[in-house]
Image (cartoon, rainbow, N blue to C red; front, side):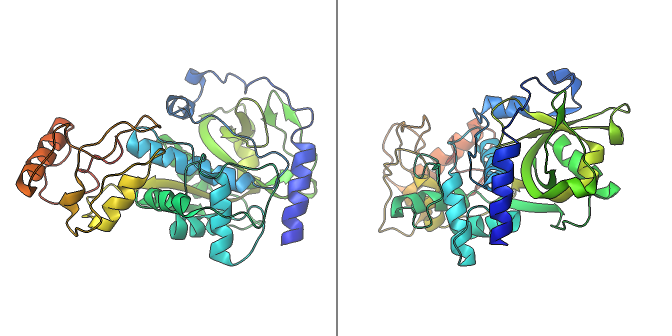
Amino acid sequence: MLIRLAVAGLLLSQNLLAGAPQDSCPDSDLAAFTVDLRPAFKKWALDPRLQGKRGTCSVFTMTGALEYAVSSKCGGGPRLSVEFLNWASNQALGQMRDGGFFSDLWRGFAIYGICPELDMPYRDEFDPALAPGEESKEHARGVHATDLRLHWIKRWNPNTGLTGKQAAAIKRTLGRQWPVCAGFRWPKNVQWENNTLVMPPPEGVFDGHSVLLVGYRDDPEQPGGGLFLFRDSNHNGPERCMTYEYACAYMNDAVWIDYETRQRTLNASAIRRQCRWREGMSRRVDAKSDSPMSLLRPGKPCQAGYFLVGLSNRPVTNLTTRVKAMLRFSSKRGWPRSGAISTMSLPWCM
């Protein structure tokens, strides 16, 4: 397995970066695609990032989906650390390798979360000894408290492609404004026509490469009936396309990430983790109190342009005042009025 991953990374670094065209997909203006998530990525400043010569395409793909889900819930957020997610997956599995399967990466996130990129920046080379500090781990637990969820469309199987039902599920997920993480058997000799991936015969692919699907366009003139739009961490340029025919023949697995929308009552520990998740964290929390209300204190801007949890600029002196202030704050933003602190009524990700 380790040898296969190493060979895959080497093939990608040699093939995908060589001679890649810089033009966009055919008719790739925003109106041409039935679904196009690029405007949302742009709004949240989630620009594509490059993996370099490392075999970490799946980690970049999963991190991109995590960033999108967090930004969708909070209206924006910091870039998240690919390096931390890579470390978390290795910790969860008790191994040290570069890159991994979507299932392994999610397992790492489910245990450790993921910290901001500034806490643990991506490196040009894999360092098995690299580990995050305690502050980074605390920040990562804050992201973990956002109630993100993983959904499988296709479990990993390199011997089959997509069924019609799975292809329809991918389009339906994109239509609901969620990107899809997809792993593929990839061409040994990558070729493009008008920035659309050319489909090779079965003997011309290897396992594999991962990309993030961010849109699609039905087109009866394209093989399979249309095009998927995708982000590729091994390409320094605009998003590219692949035909439905290619995806249905060579997609190994597919997952997507969203967040829990139901109200969930939080204890003081969970609120502290959420309060601490921001760059430039300087939280005023009452470590001695077990009451979640004790954490609702006035805040101030931090380095990332967000605000600490707080309900007004005036000090609050008792529990009743804090409850009333919370309800007024929630009402102004259209959040549910509830006597319990919930993920919907607590302004932790303004």
